[in-house]
Length: 121
Image (cartoon, rainbow, N blue to C red; front, side, top):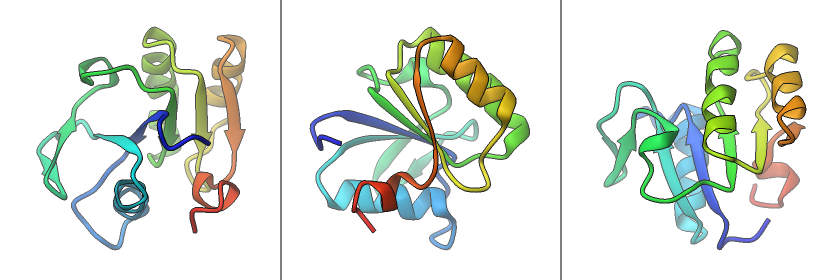
């Protein structure tokens, strides 16, 4: 993973105990261009929280999913529409339907912890 690749994190939270918050905070600290996504919007760690992927000021190369499994198919649809290249389904944020949808759309789909697999944690 190249820190110059743009990353979007679905499920960013204001709550520092939540993984969406921890992942976003760590990526910011490591110098990644990272965007927060949560339908609630708002702000986290001084950054705007976008309500959907299409609202980002630049295209995301990689998306990290930290959302409930039932929300994944709709989130993957956003990724397809926005030409995302890679999706990571974090542990607990996994759905075979969403995974298959991503693969059928030609997106590199990964089941596993983005942070651990890329040596960031």
